[in-house]
Length: 210
Image (cartoon, rainbow, N blue to C red; front, side, top):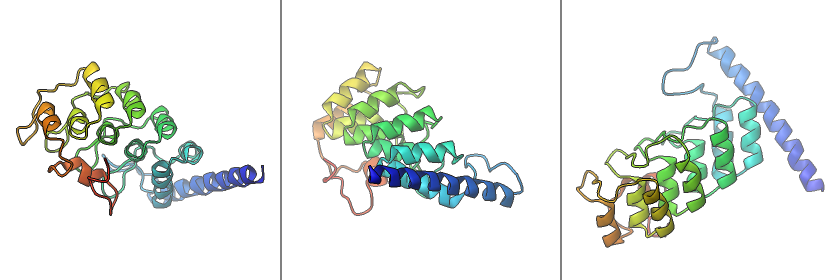
């Protein structure tokens, strides 16, 4: 009981701090709107939200968003809270972010989306959630790779089936000329795919992601 109370008090304090940070950021920019493609840069609030999404701290995420932290902010690699939550398998956190208006179609600096990250890791429940969003199922990253290609390459059969049921093409080809069917036949975790190196946290390998 005491632990829950302490956590609640911590959440309240964090929400208050974030609200203050948002206001300070607004005043420092003179009330000017942010540049196109980037939401209001309030660094502390952004870091809190990104970290909470990565760790699956759903209550913190909900509190930060409610306090005014922009839901579509990105870090220096282009990872948004939704991309981080999806990649790390935090379904409820992803639900909160989507409900708050997170852009499921937005990609990171290499064009990899939350759906691609979830497909790569085999999080079928999150893939199902993201497939309900108004994004093209065959949306591709900077080198033409789709979520189905990632699922096929890493043997995520349940995810691949869900994607196909939603119209994903097994014949579509990436910049290297490979299709999802080609990647499925290789089953090689060391293949030169952009998303694993862009999405796997520092220090992790694509082989360990299996």
